[in-house]
Image 1: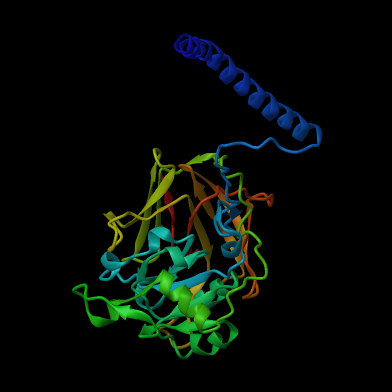
Image 2: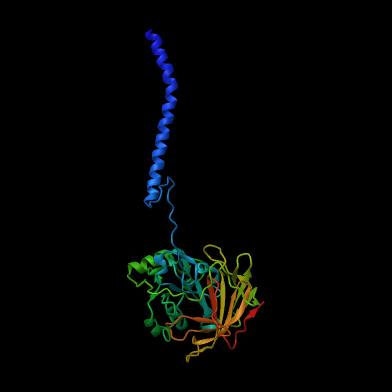
Length: 357
C-alpha cells in the first residue's frame, strides 16, 4: 500500500506541477502589467530593458554654417595660420583640405600667400608650411577675432600692426617643427593642430570667442544654393605667373583647387583641396612706398560668388580692421551662401580678369 501511495503521489505531482508553474507565471506577468499601469497613471515613463542612446547636440560652425561642433568648440576663437604658397613649396602644403576658410592674395614679387582659418584646429593634424605675416592678413584675421599664427613678418609695414592682434610667432620648439621634404629650410616649418591648441591653452592664450556670429549668411546646410550663371571652372589670375583655378565636381558638389593646370594634393594625406564656395573679391592692390611690399585695400568692392557649378556678381565690404566681411548680391539684397568651406581670392581689379566657364 505504501508503494502504491508513493507512486500515486508521483503521478498526481506530475499532473499538478505544470498547472502550478503556469499559475506562477500568470501572477508574475499580472504584477508587472499592474506596475506598468500604475507608472503610466502617475505620469512616469515605462522602464525599458533596451540601453538608452543619447544623441550628442551639435552646434553650427560659424565659419561654415554646418552643424559639426560641440558647444565648447563653437565658443572657441578660430585660429588663422599663414601658409607658404610659392610654387616651389605648394607640393609640400598640408592641412589646407581641413580649413574652413582659405584667403589668398598678393604679396611681393607677383606671388600669393595663403591664410588658412580653422574653427577647430585641434582635429586638423599637420599644417604647413608656415611663412611670415603680411599686413592685409592681419586685418583678415582680426575680422574673425582669430588667434594669428605666422613665422616672422614684414617688419616695416606688418610688424607694427601685429600689436593690434593676438599673434603667435611659430618657430622650432615654439608650436612648430621642421620636416625634411627635399626643399630649402624656409619651406620646411609645420605645426600640428592638436598640440598647437593644447599649447595655446597651457600658455594661457585667450581662446574663448565671446561671440559666434556667422561669417556669412549661410543657407540651410541641406539646401545648397544655385545661381543664375554657369561656373564649372573658375580661373583667377593674380599675376602673370600665378593663376588659381577651381574645377567643379558635380558628384561631390565642391570645387577642386589647381595651380594653373596642376592639381595640388596634400603632402601628408594625398587629398585634393575641395571647397563648397569660391569668392572672388576685386579691389585695388598696389605697392607701398618702398616699391616692393603690396598694399591690399579691404574697404569695399565688387566681385563674384561661385557655388554648385554656378556663379553671380556680388558686392562686398569690410572697412575697419576688426570688421568681418559683408556680402550682398549686385542689387544690394542679402547673399545666401551654401553651407561649407570657402576659398576667398582677393585680386587686383585693374589687372585680374576672372574667367568662368
